[in-house]
Length: 87
Image (cartoon, rainbow, N blue to C red; front, side, top):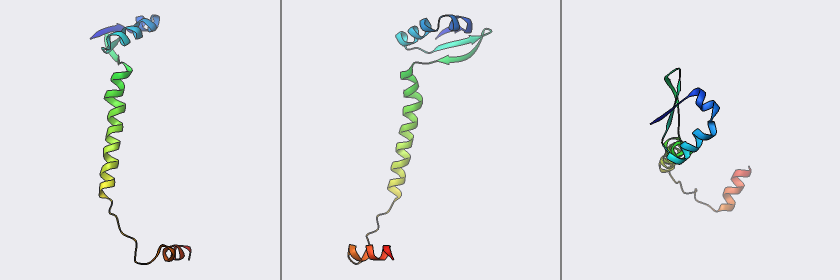
């Protein structure tokens, strides 16, 4: 995993981003020789966070839909049901 210090990141952000796009490997940002953050490619971010969250939301929605029960309308015509709703 590549590392870059905060000063180098500030001075040459464009170059660091080019390396990130080219290699795709995360880049650790160090501050005072201590790892402080990590830069990941947009592709990795989407795969690890955005797509995963959306996938979980889809699973939750499907699970809720499966719990719903269809109840047939009560006996009578649709016209009777509309009249009941209006009154």
